[in-house]
Length: 131
Image 1 (cartoon, rainbow, N blue to C red):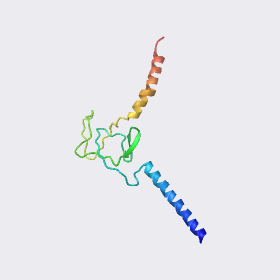
Image 2 (tube, rainbow, N blue to C red; image 1 turned 90 degrees about the vertical axis):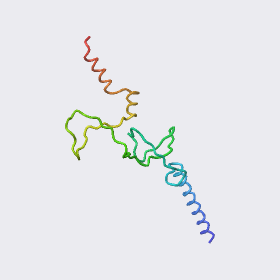
Image 3 (tube, helix red, strand yellow; image 1 turned 90 degrees about the horizontal axis):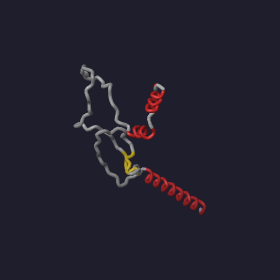
Image 4 (cartoon, rainbow, N blue to C red; image 1 turned 45 degrees about the horizontal axis):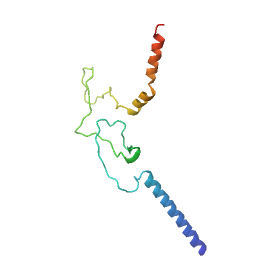
C-alpha cells in the first residue's frame, strides 16, 4: 500500500511539473494561447506591403502583438494611373501591368552593400573607355 501511494504522489508531482513548464513556455513564448491582458487595435496604412495575417508586431525589437487580419476598406480604393494603351478594360478583364509595394529591406541592402547592376555599369565604363 505504501509503495503505490508513494508512486502516485511522485507521478502527480511530475505531471504538475510538466503542466507548469508547459504553461510558462506558452505564456513567455507568445502568450496568445492562454488568456491575458490583450485587446484589439486597428490601424490604417497608405501602403501595407509586407503585412499579412499572423505577422509579429514589434516595438523596439520586442514582440508586442500579432496581426489578426488585413483588409481593404470599401470606402477607399486602389491607386490607379493611366497607361499608354487606349483600349478600355472590359468587365472581367485583368490588370496585367501592376506595381508592387516598395520592399524597404531590399532598398536598404542595396544602399548598404551596393547593387549588382551598379558594379556592372562601372565595369562596362572601364571596358568601354578609350586609353
